[in-house]
Image (cartoon, rainbow, N blue to C red; front, side, top):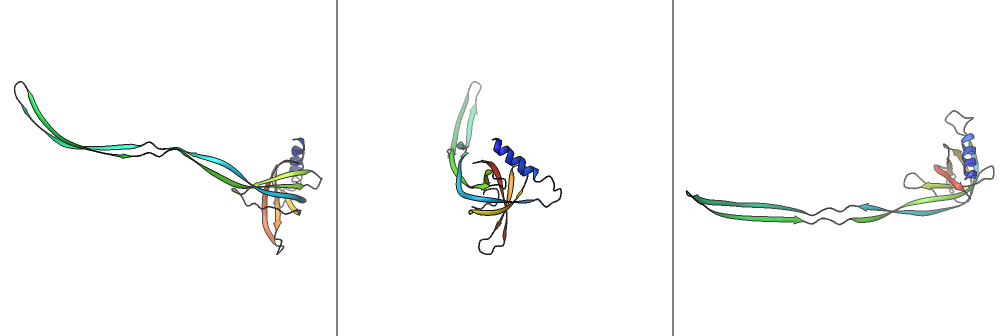
Length: 161
């Protein structure tokens, strides 16, 4: 944990001299990278069944001094819509974990979740990176074929190794 704090402090301090938009870049060495799936369940509630009834009819009757005589003819139609049971769906989101070495020799774990941002499984080699906040790096990624920039990928520093 103390190494992680020192990495975060080092990354954060490297940003202090610069007050403009340009952030200082550092060279990191990627040792390995792997992609894995984070799986979780989403629970969906069921619904109750519903019954609707309609009653149609008439009543005829006679009233005398001491009695009431009545006849009723009625028809009731009911329709029941069944409810649905509760169910669970499983969802997975791709994650990338990268082992990298910082310029001072500190070994850090970098993490990116594809569901929220652009991620890439980095091949071993050196990359330019810039600090982005207290515990994040933006790694500059270049095409292996054209050697042109493909953009920056934001990774979070999640620990050491």
